[in-house]
Length: 439
View 1 (spheres, one colour):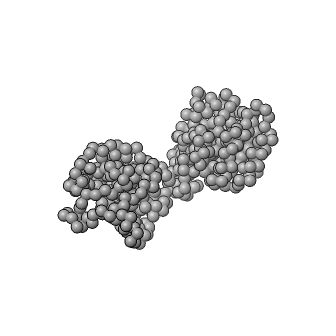
View 2: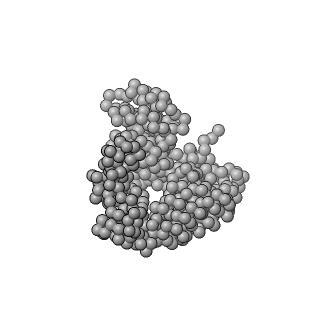
View 3: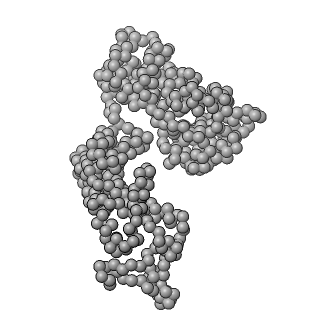
């Protein structure tokens, strides 16, 4: 039985390799490392079908070193240890370390990743990991710190067209067929920058046609053969996170058109409407915040509406909320404030609660001064009296820096009336600038 076209077309050398010129082009970092004959452990991060596995195999062939492969889907800690033992026994003095390639390394559990640490650190094996997910979230920090990270990009139009022509001209089976590419828009669109998917589509279209006739590849032919949604994306994959990121940033950037477009991409791709609704609630609190407190109410109402009416009508309240959030004034002062507070807690530890803020339910506690000196705000004019609410060592620490949107300005002015100089500073501008670097 013949191998699939994608396997038959797998490059064997860097010169045959298509794409990723920022890594393997002339003078690029990975090419220099490979040509030197010595490589360090690294992780390849990129979407499916962009050449991660192929690149690892090319490197092993070029270096002429033992090459072990594990799949995170089917391998356990025992398999990892068995490979490491083989690598130790099979290594010759001063020879390059055997290469251990782990596909989908993001699926390895913490214990599986921990079992790699010693071997990678001592150079028993050179680790090459491949992942479609952000390693910052999925790979443990000690292992990530021992590896370089290289990002692979989706193949561009020119790369994909080159691959198509190469397959038709060089593949042992396809070059015997009379195939003409009249239109390529659909096949490129369906492939989504994935070389494997591109070749699978081409193979499917060719195999469905009579062998003795000329095959003219058109967009209509490709669409009729596939009969699937070209906009669908893996809800656990990188595209999922890229599109939701674009959606949230459009809202934050006050662009209703962008927000609606990326929402439509998610809807047409089959995204869970509850996921969209949750993100709207988060954005309402994080990005609109105190500049328009009604945004959180509307986002939460949209979430409830989706749960009640379902799909497809649920898209309407979601769209209403997205437009309202995007068109609302923005403030992240509450978001920045809780972040600053958490950092302060992590840096200063468990500071004691001042005595006057503690409860005194027992006589002993009262004798020790618990609650002594506390001032009940409602007993004072305007329901306010100045007193210390932070721990003694942090009494002058500021955490909330108001941002002067019309709604939040009212809160700011009230704080000035209550606290005077405590809140009359210029740090709100600095906090806003710091917020731009978030996410």
